[in-house]
Image (cartoon, rainbow, N blue to C red):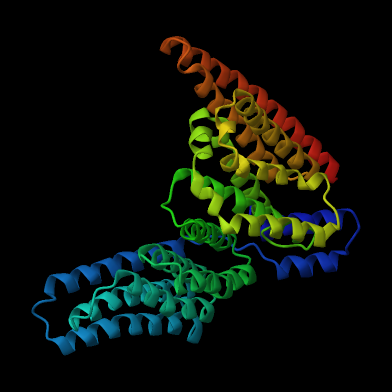
Length: 423
């Protein structure tokens, strides 16, 4: 359900409860309309994509026989005409706005192809990462000019690929990437209340966060370091969600959901003996300078918000997992492993309770999925090597069937309780 759909549902409830008048309801419903997907626009976008692929294939097939001047003219005119025709149909005449929008998107694809074609024409050094960066620089103004979510996604993808493709030391790109992400991608996503691009931007921030830790630690990437980064990043997201609470932020649900899911995924590996044993021996984790900074940011943010730590700050207890490298002997301790398994289920149950308290179906359903995932993981972990294969799968299948019936029944009952509570 989109933000505007949720808001329209709330507006109708406010009218039924007498909080707002019928006139105010009509005004608000018109101000926050639900935009339905159009088959015409979908077909036009698909047609533009196929046309663009065809143009690129045509160029590649006839490239050698074309003179250099004609090559440049064709490359530049292709995306210029596409942009111009799209603007004409969508804004100037406004006769075919959906087709015009598709042509604008086609122009962005042809512009990207033009970067590498011009480099080939003039025999310029083929630096893949710089090509993606130039593509980002050309598409992001188009996203703002035409208020286009698709062009914003294309710009974000190119920015991330530029960052990942480059073999950079800890220098300027590590500074430029978060600055560009925060100053160009996130503002438009928030302005448009674009959940997809907002979530993708948060994922992109994590993609930057983990390599930063690896560079600071002067080590190579490992699964254990990635999980450490995920835990710390999710805690920072948790802090951000707390600061934005009750501010009618459009992506509040998804921010909460990403935080809960990130903490669950970060906690789950610590319930496996092999992972925790290897994690405890990674001495390079001593040199995570951003670890202390992340902890200070989380606690300082909570202090500024509520002046004290309370029951909402329970996820902070997960920071104890980052102490394992300081005490490697803990990795071989069976009691610690049992504690981590208990914490995994306690966390999942607390997440379910949190969704119920908020009367939030999205958070509640996500938490149910996390609890079910924990049960399945631990069943495989504990019984796969103990039971005969036939007994393992028969028992597992029965448990899943019965468990799914039980959880679905409880889920429906609790959702009905939440709906009654809203009325």
